[in-house]
Length: 281
Image (cartoon, rainbow, N blue to C red; front, top):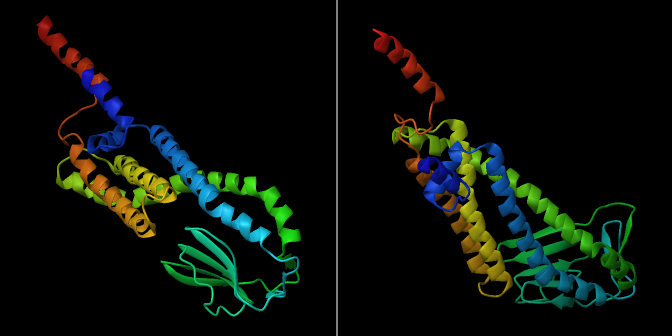
C-alpha cells in the first residue's frame, strides 16, 4: 500500500526521472491535466513578456506615425523620404526605411522595418521580409487610423496569444512525445523494463515538462533583463536537451519486466481455487 501511494505521489510531479517514469502507469487524462497546468504557466509567461516588452514599443510607434500614410496595391505611400525610427527599447525597434538602406541601426534584439514594398524583420537569427499583399484594400499606416484600432485590439491580442499558446503547447508536446516514445521504448526493452509503447508515450509526454519549466524561467529572466538574447537562445537549446535526457533516463526507473508491480486481483482467487481442493484432500 505504501508503494502504491508513493507511486501516485510521484505521478503528480514529472520533475524527477522516477516521477516521469511513473506517468507510464497514470491515465492519459492525468498527464493532460499536468501538461495543461504547465501550458497555462507558459502562456502567462509569454503574455507577460509581450505586454511588458513589445506592446509599449508598438504603442509608441503608432503614436509617432504621421497623419498620412497608407499601403495601397502592395506599396507603402509615405509622406517622408528619410528613414525614421519610430520607437524602440532593448527588445524591439520599429522604424520606416522605404529603401531598406540600413540607415536605421538599433541595438534592439528585434528590429521591424517598414519598406516601400515589404516589411523586414532583423534579429540575431537573421533577416527576413514579407511583401505587402497585392490587393485593392487600403491599409492606413497613420496615427488617426491605427491609434483607435490599436486601443480596441490591444486586450484581445493578449487573450488570443494566451489561448493560442495554451492550445498549441500540448499539441507540440504530444508530437514531441511521439518522437521520443520510440527511443524510450527501445531503452526499456534492452534494459528489461516493463514499458509498452503507449506507456512510453506517456513517459515521454511527462519528460518534456521539466524542459518547459526551464524555458518559462528563461522567458521571465529575459524579460527582467537577467539574461540576454544569446542566453535565451541557449536556454531554448538546453530545454530540448533536458527533454531528451529525461525521456532516455526515465525508462530505467520503470519496474523490471518480470516483476508485477500492479496487484493482480485474480491472482489471489486463482491461488485459493488451487489450494482449496488440496486442503480438502
